[in-house]
Length: 396
Ligand SMILES: Cc1cc2nc3c(=O)[nH]c(=O)nc-3n(C[C@H](O)[C@H](O)[C@H](O)COP(=O)(O)OP(=O)(O)OC[C@H]3O[C@@H](n4cnc5c(N)ncnc54)[C@H](O)[C@@H]3O)c2cc1C
Image (cartoon, rainbow, N blue to C red; front, side):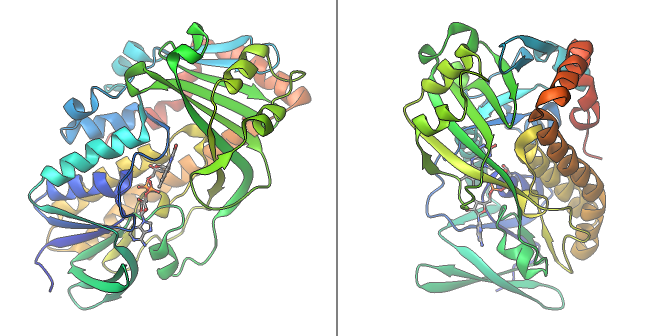
């Protein structure tokens, strides 16, 4: 039965949960349907640049997030072979002053748990787990959703349906976007280790980025600084979907040979006993996200490669803008969804393209790598200003 002013959201990832909060605060009822039986703390580190943290703060989440976030004092970019720091860009207080909101690093599971607590505490949001949306039908004033639960089916109706169902979105396909995500020929390996397992210089509050030929390494502390999140990205043809395939440490270390990687980077890669890996995909920007009372949000709308650390941030931005558009024209959900798409498509497309291009630059070898290093040395602390367009963004 259709509830007046109910918005149905497919997916309780970072995007779906943030959207639920942003939409409910505009006076709507929200029904979130999530395919997973449990929202476990899967994943590792996620960076929340000021464009995202300002939204989470505005949604009242600062207190819930405070015990989990780490504020990086700086970004350090290093050359893989020599270990030399090519550029250091201040974050911390500088970023907060420049962009009006903090830069945070957090475990994805901690962010999802904080959002989930806020969603569960909200009287106008219902969250159902183990419910996989399979299809929808549009009627004059509503959209009806068909979903599977165990062996049975569930039906929900609302004035709008938001597909926040991630990279492999069922709703994106159902909306007629048939192109499969593009495999980037890269895999990301992630591990978490206690801070005592790494050299003291690597447990300080900083984002470290090592650039090598066809591979790069990112590491930073999470969980209030108790753990270090390590992500190694390399050229690879392994392309199974999913987030958490086991990866063998010796296989990874062999891909970071001593001839190309400084001993301290190899020590860091040797520290974890367990790795998990996922294959990297993105999509070319979609021309039209949704139709009628249905739209897409987050990775479902604009899956991107992680080389700008903006996947979660863009999903959070989408959520804020969607809430705003629905709130501005509450009597016209279809018009609100088109206004939302119009506000979001150019920015998310630019971010998708910029992430892809960073991947190419990060993995250069030979002369290209030397020119890149020179450019980084010359930019120095001004490096971060290249991202003013990203971090300075405000919902309007
Ligand atoms: C398990 C997992 C682990 C991750 N780990 C990392 C990580 O370590 N580092 C990193 O940078 N990024 C990670 N990500 C990706 C990152 O969270 C997203 O890129 C980003 O936060 C955008 O979020 P999203 O909400 O758009 O999509 P997602 O976070 O992918 O969330 C989509 C949600 O939709 C649900 N879903 C899918 N299909 C349906 C359906 N038909 N009906 C109902 N629900 C459905 C999924 O179960 C999932 O909970 C991970 C994502 C997932 C799902």
